Image (cartoon, rainbow, N blue to C red):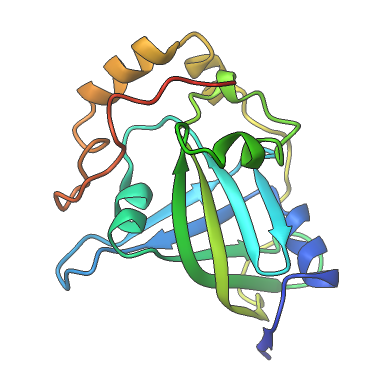
Length: 195
């Protein structure tokens, strides 16, 4: 049934890079804290950096739970499901870190996503995840679903924003600077874009 892998390479890497959708799960340390589960899409916004490190682009949105949880404790799980082909589920359990736009590593990380126009999506950070446990399991109960196309709504919504208007948008949202549980979220004002 399930298998543990020492690294993300070969068939495993090809599988996760081919998926148009993945999920992230994080939680605060508090026992009564809010667990967060988020879908992530947008072709070209995920990259395998090396055999134990992956990254994805964190775009503008109405909250920043993942960022808040990673800033507090770093725990994260990423999950991919096969909706076509053989039934497979892959999970990467690890430690994550939001790399913000004013971090010296940001430009080099951003270069790993050549097919994305970061200005069109209100890019906030690059989330870098170091794998501690990589496993696959069967996806026998996951239904077949077809992938039709990318949605263009996110780019259409945020392409008209600049750093000043993004700051205004984030400031108005209740759970961007602070998480649902009161943890520090996205640092505001947003550092200027260098891209």
